[in-house]
Image (tube, rainbow, N blue to C red; front, top):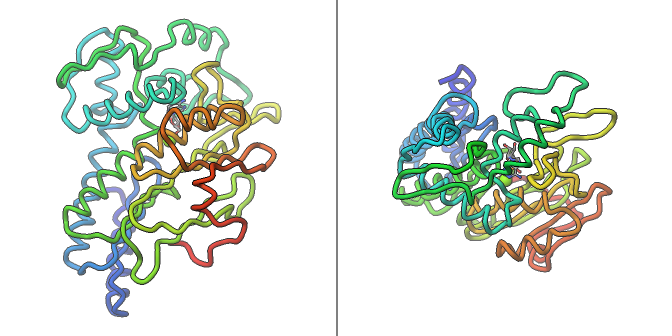
Length: 342
Ligand code: AMP
Ligand code: MG
C-alpha cells in the first residue's frame, strides 16, 4: 500500500470513530485507484462490518488497478500483447465479463465508445506518455490507425479465450472501468447486508438506498467554472457519470485536445460537447454511455442515447448551453446549488 493510501486509511479510521461517537451510523473510506480518489460511504451499519467491508473493497481495487491497467504491466497489457501478436489469450471470469460488457456497449454505441482504441489513446499521449510540448501526433500515425480501424467486431471471444483478427486492437478500459468497478463494489456491499451506501469516484458514482431520513444529494460540476451546475437527489439505486473535456487535456495554439477520442476521425472529439452526464441504474452503462454521447456531440447525442437505451442525459456544449432529455429534466435541479454534497 502506498504511503498516501496508508495515511488515508488512518484518517478513515479516525473519522469513522468520531462519527460513531456522535451516534451517526455513517462510515467513510477513501481509496486511491485508477488515478482517482474513491470515496465509499456506508450508512446504517456497525463499525466492525464497515471496517471489514472497507478492507475488502481496498483489496479489490488494488487488484483491479493492476489487472485492468492499459499501460502498466498487468493482466490487460498481457492480453493486449497477445491480441497484437494474433495469439489467443485466456481471461479470468471477471475480465471476461468486463470485456464482454465493454464490447456489448460499444456495439450499442455504433462504435463511438470504442474500448479497443488503446493505440489511438496512446498516440495522443493519454496513456501516461504526454506529448512533448508544442507537438501533436504524426498525421501518418493517425492515418495508419484509421486504415486498420480496430473495433470490437475484430474481437472473438470463445469461452474464456479471446483473440483479435486486427493486430491494432488494444483494450483501453478508461471509459468504463470506473463504472464497472463501482457496480462490483455495490454488489459486494449489498452482499454484506448493507442497503444504504454510495461509492463515488471523483464525482462519478452509484448510490443505493438513502442517507437516513433523506435521499443522497450529489452535485454535477460545471465544465467551464469552479461551481456546481446541477444538483441531483438519488433515491433508490442510481448512477451518475460525467465525461468532460476538462478532466484531462492539453492545449496547442489555443485549441483544447481532450482525452476523449473520436474513433471516426482519430482526433480528440470535436463535436461541440464540453460535458455529458448520464444517469442509469448500472454504473458501467452510465460510464460507457457518457463517453459515447460526448463523442456524438451536439448534433447526434439524442440519437446515440436512444440507440443505447439511455433515457437520462444532460449535455453542456462548448458555449455553456444545456440540453437535456425530459427524464433528465425531472431528475436534476437547476440552477440552484445543492446545500450539501452527499
Ligand atoms: P471517460 O472519462 O469515461 O469519458 O473515459 C475517457 C477515457 O476512456 C480516456 O482517458 C481513454 O482512456 C478512454 N477513451 C478515450 N476515447 C474513448 C472512446 N471513444 N471510447 C472508449 N474509450 C475511450
Ligand atoms: Mg466513461
